[in-house]
Amino acid sequence: MNSFSPSSQPSNTPAPVIFGEAPLCIEQIVALAQLRAPAQLQNDPAYRAKIAKGAAFLDSLLDREGVIYGVTTGYGDSCVVAVPLHQVEALPRHLYTFHGCGLGQLLNAEASRAVLAARLQSLAQGWSGVRVELLERLQAFLEHDVLPLIPEEGSVGASGDLTPLSYVAATLSGEREVLFRGEQRSSAEVHAELDWQPLVLRPKEALALMNGTAVMTALACQAFARADYLLKLATRITALNVLALEGNPEHFDERLFAAKPHPGQMQVAAWIRADLAIDAPTAPLHRLQDRYSLRCAPHVLGVMADSLGLLRQFIETELNSANDNPLIDAEAGRVLHGGHFYGGHIAFAMDSLKNLVGNVADLLDRQLALLVDTRYNHGLPSNLSGAPAATAMINHGFKAVQIGASAWTAEALKNTMPASVFSRSTECHNQDKVSMGTIAARDALRSLELTEQVAAATLLAANQGVWLRQRDGNRTLPAALALMHAQLAEDFPPVIEDRALEGELRLCLTRIRSQHWSLYA
Image (cartoon, rainbow, N blue to C red; front, side, top):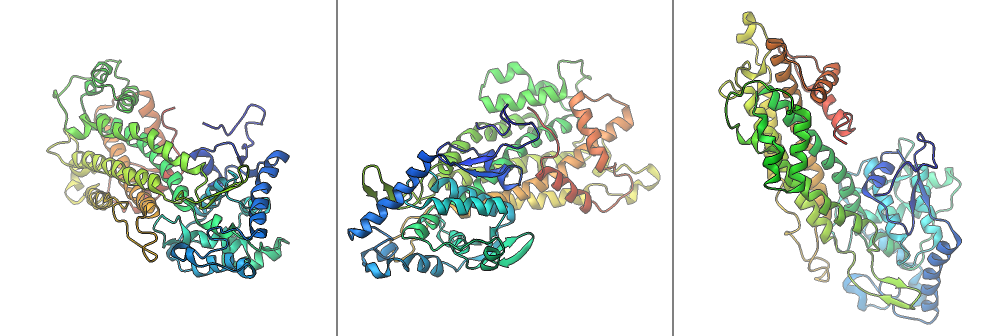
């Protein structure tokens, strides 16, 4: 994995994300999208010559009146329509213009930065026949935080993310609107303010910008980073709930997991063992076996832990690939027509992630259901209310929070339906099998949003349960959980008399999404 803080740099100076021949990782795209790292373009003479050679080869083909898809022909099923040379220069603008039909919400600023980064890294591979100046302008958009306003709906994921990426092509050309310094502005105005000349896209450049998987890949990078943190947070919540519910720590014994050695499952069990410090003396056990949402937590979370490596491989391979069409092999003097815009690997990764994340929501929701129910919580008050006996009958603690978590879980589970199997034949049956990768990625982010809400609810409830056990028994917590309990207490006091918890849940969500708590190395 690439490092953000090489020894040659001061520790407080983020290393730049360098777009070029070297591969990038998910964390670099996320850091750039969150303004934690700057963007640079590889700039050595050999690299610049390599990029320029592709554009020059395309020009030589035009001089010889070669037939090139999307350059001297129409697009899609119109590839049989020849474009006369005097119209070739106008074709790129027509491409991004007629694709300006996106709908739905606009991608937020973080997602838009990730889209620019994903497209720049693909074009920087040197297979797309674009000018160095185009790569430089994409890098400048990132450097100056000029963000195309991109509607999130309208892509079927092959021929790439055509409609949403048309907003990138158009804004590079000084058309449509961007977000700049917190304001929605016309791209032309921002170009003038920065003393830039809008690009006039050369033959193939609009197609190279649009005919690729940058939107789905950008969203997949964001989803992966959130899922990776969610896995660790759900493990920590489980450990807190083992304490709150006086669970059996022997369910996480190292010898037990050595007998079924899925690596991720073993890792989750090891994290829980460390949290519970189970090598230390423990209280007498109340039962041999806990309910599955505690006992089988490493098995549920372990599936995600074991899957993330494969999903990373799919996402990062796509990120560092040339994924437009046609590809330009300037060295061999060939134009390669294919289908690298097809987002099947991202679609599978995101459909899989939805399933994994939905199971995390279900696990945490079941743990929360145990916490609030006096039939199963082993002596905790009903609904985790901390009210004294005199007002206990009118206080309901986490009752409504559990109902909300159940609703969020149900929606996350409903959202696990795979998008990739809903391929639709489009564009006069030229695009007759498509990936739906962008829809899958948007679904995955929605599933993460819902599951983070379940995690926030269960985390606050688990912390309340631990507080109640300490209040009633003055028990010493293992070091890792004592630290987490103290950190949570800074923002979330115990619920004694009923209070509206929306504000605290929203604050907890903010903490989760900023990865506020340091969890497991």
